[in-house]
Image (cartoon, rainbow, N blue to C red; front, side, top):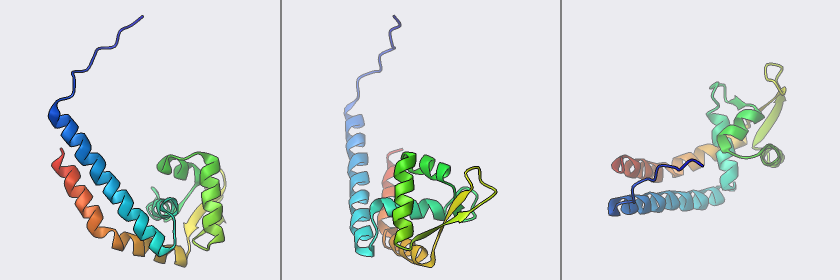
Length: 137
C-alpha cells in the first residue's frame, strides 16, 4: 500500500486566508441572489444567461455540452434549466447543423436585458471580490 506524502499542517495565515476567501465568496453570492431575485431570475438562470453571452466561440450561442462543462451541472439539470428559461422567454433553442448534437441556445432580447441589468448591478460587488482575490495572492 502506498503512503501519501503528508502535507504540512496549515499555518494561522492559511486559516485567515481561507476564512477571508469564503467570506468574500459568500458575500458576493448573497448579493448576487438579492439582485437576481429583484430582476426576476434565479441565480442559476443568471449563470446560464452569462455562459450563453460569453460562449467560447464568442458567437453568443452555445451548445448543451459546453453549458454542462461551464456550469458544472449534469445534462438533465442543464436541459431542464434551458427549457424553463425558454418558457420564460429568456433563451431560444435553434437548430445548428454545425454542432454535434444539432442544437444551440441563444439569448432573446428579454434575456439580454435581464442579464445586462444583473451584470451592471453586480459591478461594484464583482470589483470588490476581484480586489480581495488579488490581495490573497
